[in-house]
Image 1 (cartoon, rainbow, N blue to C red):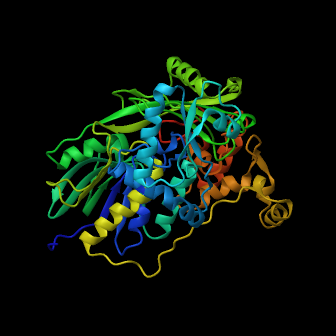
Image 2 (cartoon, one colour; image 1 turned 90 degrees about the horizontal axis):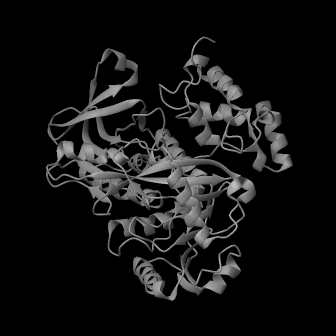
Image 3 (cartoon, rainbow, N blue to C red; image 1 turned 45 degrees about the vertical axis):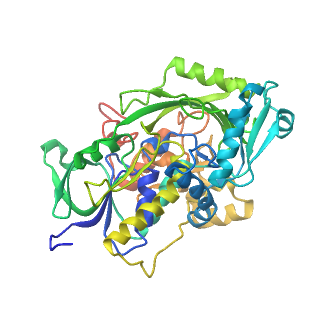
Length: 489
């Protein structure tokens, strides 16, 4: 490296689960790392609206980076969940087949999974599948059973990775949008627009020896700024319905249908928090912000889910939502340096199984960057992180001890999810603490229950204002522009 001075060694663009996983792994090394996120918080894009599944790894093409990262990421989840206090359960998964004509497709998945290194796979009959999952329909002829499939909280996972990275020295810059990237010596100069100065139109620059492009549906934009070999990311919208906890036991395993042209199809799964989730649809769109739902897509979710699972209590739907997958035409993860842009590392085209692959992608790219930088491992890396206690999940003795020490843990604010004032306050006080209502929701589930924050929002806003000094009229649902109060107060 020449004598050019750089503000940071590595600039990571994007605060989703991929960017945060890479940042955490980079924090193991003696490197100056910053993460740039255009919204007010981590987990604000694709990472907040997905199936919350840890895939076993039988779906991706054998020999692909997608298959390699999926299987390795799955293997890493038990240790990661223990180290970072992430709720995670290996509930297993099934892929349903509905006719003898489709059996070759199921067999192909099985062979691919074995080739990819997925343990414990087996094809079972429809009768055995119904013994394991009584609410499967009579139309199920056979199923591929994968015991290593799992469910996780994607919000908690992303936040945990970010908090641990922060504790190990990564600087997080929120409301910071990268608008341009140019070569700078042997590194890069990033032009950024920060919310605090956006009204004046002033930009600033950040110089970095290396750049990590983990920008989700916007990853093509940044890649194409530095490389002549263009890539194109198509937003693929997936719509979901979330059902109340009363429906959470309708199935125990994640139920897929045989994959089609647009992916794995509509699934039915319990969530790690006890709800039932159905979806997603798959619609390629041009709008990189198009996370609205449509009546047609919601109808598709209910119609397709009923083919494999009977008696789904659709009247217990408490909310619907849509997320965008970053689909690249080659349907493969793009990881590493373009030939004509050394020092620029892509983590692009990360669609499903991106959440499952995130831990492995983090290791893969961080090691690649550390080798190129000649960086050594830190002597005192902090590998563990403790989450916020949830009083409703504690036994009586532990709950009493906590409330005696922290009385605010004895005041319930969100009655649907039994979230206390203490949990909300700690979600704000922690490293990278919440600065919006959505930030609190993703950390402690305030407002995620049956009433969808209909009753607890005013009190939560008061707590957020008290803890941060943000005036009530400036409190946002998420980023600036989504203020909860308009007019006078």
